[in-house]
Length: 346
Image 1 (tube, rainbow, N blue to C red):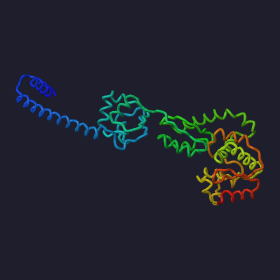
Image 2 (spheres, rainbow, N blue to C red; image 1 turned 135 degrees about the vertical axis):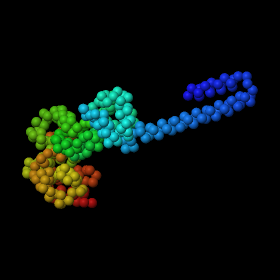
Image 3 (cartoon, one colour; image 1 turned 90 degrees about the vertical axis):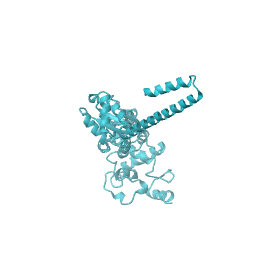
Image 4 (spheres, helix red, strand yellow; image 1 turned 180 degrees about the vertical axis):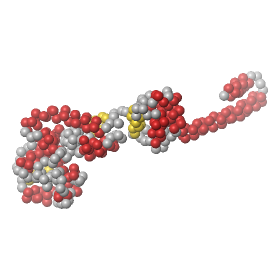
């Protein structure tokens, strides 16, 4: 590089001296030939560096996105390197170890969960684990009213890579996980989610606890009924009318006969149900068994719970929703069959 600068310096000294035009022209041509040489050398160097980067330092093509890698306490540099290579976080064992040492040595690796949103170079990966830069920023998740534990587990499984859906379904108290918008770290576990959502439910239910007590039925019955009311209707007035019908069916020993409970049994909704489905031997089959199902069938919001404990009294025992979502009521089964012919069998 020093020889290159000397050539440039000599060129300017000679060019601006009192030499003939021919001498200056020859000098310029010689200088151009030297410059082209150094340009070629520079281009070759850039090409070599680019190839070297792509082969050894760049992220693997299948670098996982939205991924959590874990370094346990006591893990050696070799164990971490092998683990990261298997998880496609790095291409080269050698260069990962080299950068770890350059950034402070293998004793500087911090045990933690590291969240990778997008592909990083091996140098960046090494830098993060030697600086305890775990990248765990909270992720927003919104759980809408009416979801059951299986649907909720699927939503969390899509957003959180360490979330165990089966564990969640096993420990989540259906109906008592309040629908809301939450923020969880990417490495959140199922039991942590359950604890946060259940606490939210307990805080929300306090606001209407006196009304529930005044209604005179156990909280468990209210939540089960509210989960049915929530999945049957969306408007407050309609929910309150349906709640009255369903409470009175229980009072007179009539089966609830709600289709929405089958979604909890076999995933089917009203349009998909067959006569064979109505014969399924399940405590959630409200055609076969009287009374409430053993647990809620979904997560009710406060509005559905309020509707359940403030029913609008009527003489109706039957209801159905037509193709436009309009609810139709009937006092007798014959009237109900007539409504089916008028509003559904068309």
